[in-house]
Figure 1: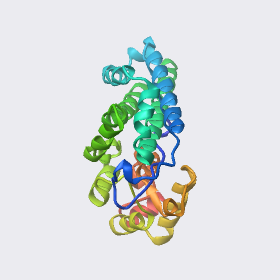
Figure 2 (figure 1 turned 135 degrees about the vertical axis):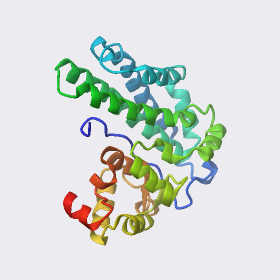
Figure 3 (figure 1 turned 90 degrees about the vertical axis):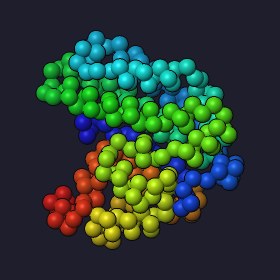
Length: 259
């Protein structure tokens, strides 16, 4: 499951003030990037629909909820959704990237699940069901934002949306809710401090983690962004492994045993 489930998301533009109005962000993002990501997402979603027709897969795991979620996306056009998200500036770009990553991960998971079940691998049906459910959960969490209809509705939906609902890892979701509720992004120093106080992580380990997170995300576009971390970047690691196995044990003893 760990090998199949991750690839979830990448970057949003961080800000310590959590959500900000799309009008407060500089209009330096080209609409084409938002549309490009949405087109990639829709291509992955179409592949998911095709894979759901696999009789081996359908006979092994329940797929009703995944099918219903895909149907909700199918009634909309990628270009129109991309244009809506473009009105949200960097937040819209982040949601587009999150959608592209989650849909691609679901398509890959369905493909691997079908192959593993057909090959008769032990527990293939069990881990396939878990992986599909977790990714379907992430796509469904994005629906209110992705299908908002226009940039103004997107802004309203974003303010009402809880980022924690997007996370599949319970321990990371609780951590984020406790320390950075309603935030899409936080200052690197604030995140490191929360890890030190709540997870007993030493300074060196925190710095290594932050360096790794930056290295696997998009290139920062400003010095300000280089001093911040994005929720979707961290979800790539923690939604897959959880905080303990993802490098954030809750005690020194756990740190020794997992390190």
